[in-house]
Amino acid sequence: QVQLVESGGGLVQPGGSLRLSCAASGNILSIYRMGWYRQAPGKQRELVAAITNGISTNYADSVKGRFTISRDNAKNTVYLQMNTLKPEDTAVYYCNADITLATLFHSNYWGQGTQVTVSS
Image (tube, rainbow, N blue to C red; front, side, top):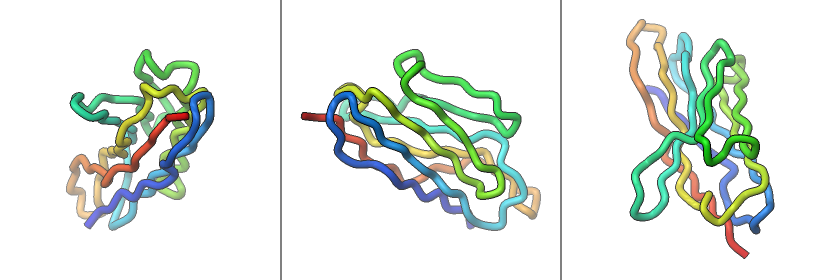
């Protein structure tokens, strides 16, 4: 079994910062791509940022220059540093990962989500 456990969400004022973490655990052989998605009330889930194991990254236009994604391969963990937060960043943030298990089974996994609220 694979688990993705997110942490770091919360309430922050506009202009503030938060750092999200997502740790993958289980019988993992390798993780190719890890990413963060978000879903605001009444809206579709959207990609925020993603990073491959080659450290290639991509970002949604709305967060470029404010958010930074990084990963620690030794810990199977991905981070999302969010700076200059805006009210429109309010959403549930989900971790996502493409994982190959030691059995060579490959699949895509989601975390349970963490709430980020930007409000004064």
